[in-house]
Image 1 (cartoon, helix red, strand yellow):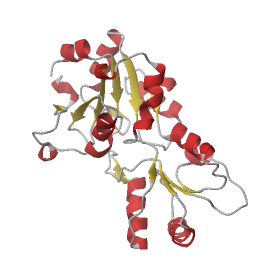
Image 2 (cartoon, one colour; image 1 turned 90 degrees about the horizontal axis):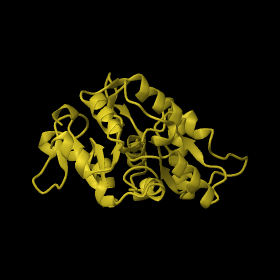
Image 3 (cartoon, one colour; image 1 turned 90 degrees about the vertical axis):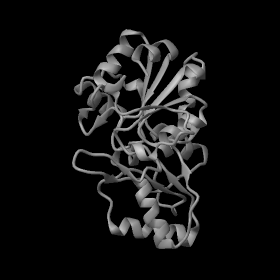
Image 4 (spheres, helix red, strand yellow; image 1 turned 60 degrees about the vertical axis):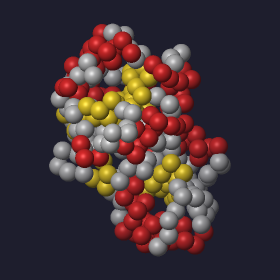
Length: 253
């Protein structure tokens, strides 16, 4: 597909970050030029990431330093949805394995734990994991996933994400769990975007590198998916029945 065709056909552009636009702190090939072209065409842009390591301002800073113009209000992470879910369901003292950015936004008390929350975390330890397993086994607590991704791409290699923690817990318990997923591919993740923008879904496109989160979210929201093969998904994963725009990389536009 040509860039001008994209600009003519769509008004709302949603971008996954890790593996699609960025790898670590560096923009992937074609990302800077594409976003500049969309800005010049006055398109509506959001950056949709399952990464909850940092507050939204950290992600906008990261994009801007890499040459991609971004504002805090254009960054969507699962954190806002997680806070809403915890409040709505009156969760007062969750046991949390997640980043400090997540932990500081959640309630805590001296009472018994009433949920287990898992997010991308780079400092969890064995004791935390054992506690989570025991709470789920003994008290059948609900499990809430910020995101189901098994890993997050990094320049030095993939790092385990909350989906990997979930798999480890299920293996330990010898049991398949049914977690509540807050981020992609939960269609509610994009509800604020469509509520705040008068744009038809037929005029929206989501760029991402993962079939089971990014493209699944596009399908759930009935918008076009653009699968970029610079991250998790490879050529061998693409089948003829997929109704996505498929790009080797963003330079191919």
